[in-house]
Amino acid sequence: MGDVELIGDEEVEVVATLNGKPLKRRAKARQHLADFLRQELELTGTHLGCEHGICGACTVLIDGRTARGCLTLTAQISGKSVETIEGLSDNGRLAELQQEFIARNAAQCGFCSSGMLLTAYELVQGGEKLSRSEIREHISGNMCRCTGYHAIVDAIEAVLAKGLR
Amino acid sequence: MKARNFRYVRPASLQEAYRMLAEAGGEAVPIAGGQSLLAGLNMRLSSPKVLVDIGNLAELTGQSYADGMVRLGALTRHRDLLSSAIVRAHLPLLAEAAPHIGHIAIRNRGTIGGSLAYADPAAELPACAVALGATLVLGSAKGERQVKAEDFFKGLFETDLRAGELIVEVKFPEVPTGTSTGFAELSRRHGDFALVGVAALAILRAGDIESARIVYFGCVDRARVAVSVSAALSGVAVPLEDASPYAAAIRNDVKPDDTPGLRADTKLHMATVLTRRVLNSMVE
Ligand SMILES: Cc1cc2nc3c(=O)[nH]c(=O)nc-3n(C[C@H](O)[C@H](O)[C@H](O)COP(=O)(O)OP(=O)(O)OC[C@H]3O[C@@H](n4cnc5c(N)ncnc54)[C@H](O)[C@@H]3O)c2cc1C
Ligand code: FES
Ligand code: FES
Image 1 (cartoon, rainbow over the protein chains, first blue to last red):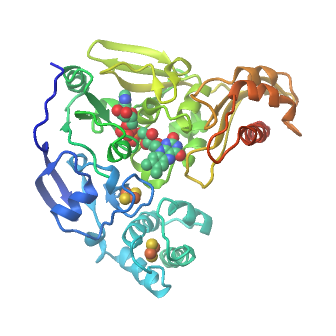
Image 2 (image 1 turned 45 degrees about the vertical axis):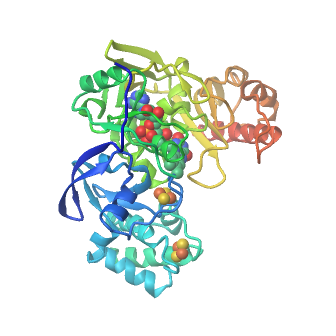
Image 3 (image 1 turned 90 degrees about the vertical axis):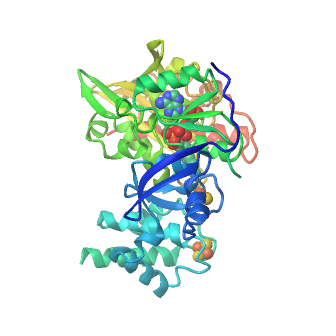
């Protein structure tokens, strides 16, 4: 063999869990998860900026861990559980984060916010006491051009403090 | 941008993966975490016709320790280097290096096999693998072979991997008692690729360096032992006040060149400072 001929978009079957519900779809092999969510499922809470892993706007959770939607093929989520901002907004810890973000104006234009919230969510789930620089390190893969980050760190710190009681 | 069209296949076993790679005859590439490959596909730096997803193959996972040897499956993720008790106990150098690899979301997905196969000269793990004297187990439809890390990296993004071959696991000899390891890197922002980095192994005795094995990254074309510096440091007393007496040896190993935004003499200065820092960090 050796001569692979591709005619038209290659497709692949995807069976996964999305926001707690079963998902079974055919997807384009070359389509990354962020485009799949936005274009095929109209879940536009996952944003898309750089498309090469730098900005973090496309952050989703795969099996509970943050991942780049733009650096994950839709096909790669087969057998896994994916959560997006749409699925987590009613969840206690995320709702707390959202409130603290709003209270401190940590979401301004909102472009980074869904990714930032999911990254923060992963951090507060850990339940550890963290310094501001540790919080900063954790969110360092998510860019925000509006807030200057202080308000975001404040909001995460506030939620962490509540969790520790 | 968007990736070009390709076929995506999901082998159920390592043998099936080997077969799929062999059948596509050089037109297929494996995908593990996708954290380097997909960025390149999105930018259309490459356009393979078939992607073979090895990301769920149980044969490529796991960490173990036996008889003075740590084995890390190719799918060991960067985050596992931080959480694995085996790595922390026997290969603290890897645990020290891991937080410098990208950001949390990248570390959640990226794998050691992918990092070594990609062979970015600014990457942390190839340098650590060379410093630690690791051996890579490579497999294909034709069988397995073993290659030392120092022979594996051939040049800029170039390795000894043959078409259809996979990194199966990486074997690290345990760092012997009395040998210390150290790691340091400078980058523009934490999580960025290193401008200059050092992974080091040394035997220190009574305040002297008995022997050292220094590997630079970020400022070189590939991960390799810095032989001139390593030799020049033997018998030297630590902590070092100043590493500038070894600048000539460092220049000889690193051969720094001007790159956009960073002059050769700046790189040399950074490498010299980091060499001092890393050696001093190894003195209890
Ligand atoms: C924003 C960003 C920042 C980053 N920063 C850093 C950094 O600071 N330091 C750093 O070292 N890395 C960094 N990376 C890269 C990251 O570490 C990657 O995870 C790693 O280089 C590749 O691992 P992967 O599993 O994702 O491989 P993939 O992207 O899946 O594959 C990479 C290459 O290796 C091949 N390959 C994968 N697995 C195997 C195998 N088992 N056998 C043979 N070939 C294989 C693939 O075919 C491909 O050519 C960064 C990436 C991003 C997106
Ligand atoms: S769009 Fe994925 S990281 Fe920027
Ligand atoms: S709020 Fe605008 S980018 Fe963060």
